Image (tube, rainbow, N blue to C red):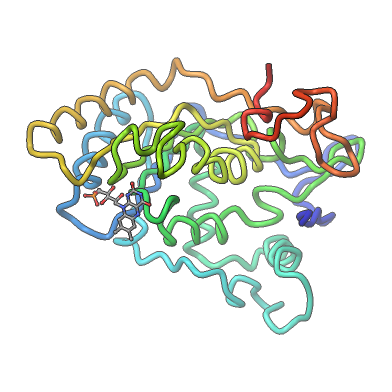
Length: 281
Ligand SMILES: Cc1cc2nc3c(=O)[nH]c(=O)nc-3n(C[C@H](O)[C@H](O)[C@H](O)COP(=O)(O)O)c2cc1C
């Protein structure tokens, strides 16, 4: 199903064209943490990771469970349009334009807009992020804030473009399965593919480049020594983040996809249907 392109927008530029645009503050990072328990491995990694990142960035942290974030997108997110008939994405965009945004959502949008680096940390639950984080996407990456405008050719500014473009994201994920089980031939499926809906469908959709995943495999079986090793590995990874480049997904505006259908042009990787076709050569 094609997603709605809404025409009501946040900024009008000097040419009279309209676009969503959020300037980030260099050196700002926002860490979104999703785990319900204090004594978890994830909590230890959060402490190590945010401390390490703070030596290079000005870091804000949203601890979604501790903050009591409400993950379910509901009519409350439509402000005074709650009773209006229509499409949820469009109505949410109109509510955003009217400034009718729930305070906890507004706070997250401000933090995302400010940050040049976004960190998403979570345990893998049923082959994806916990519902709490999914709900954060549903509510925070709202039409009008994160997507919904068109470029000068009338093409939706999404998949590598849009008001959040230029930002990068680090995904930190712990898994119960080991590396082979979540590998290219593993019974759980390849983690890269399992998280494509996040790295491509969410982040790239709104213009944010995902860095290589930071994965802690076999996370349920780690003793104190292994946990310390993983803490150190995350600290080292975080210290390298400023030098890392995002994964090179294809940009919609580069013309690799047919305009009417959104399908990759037949001449590119003919016959292939795997998710790897969405990477630029
Ligand atoms: C509801 C639920 C679903 C889970 N689903 C998966 C899964 O699909 N794949 C996997 O490898 N581990 C899965 N796990 C295991 C968690 O990923 C693992 O326990 C967690 O990463 C360990 O980190 P923690 O000690 O900080 O919670 C699941 C755990 C729970 C509670």
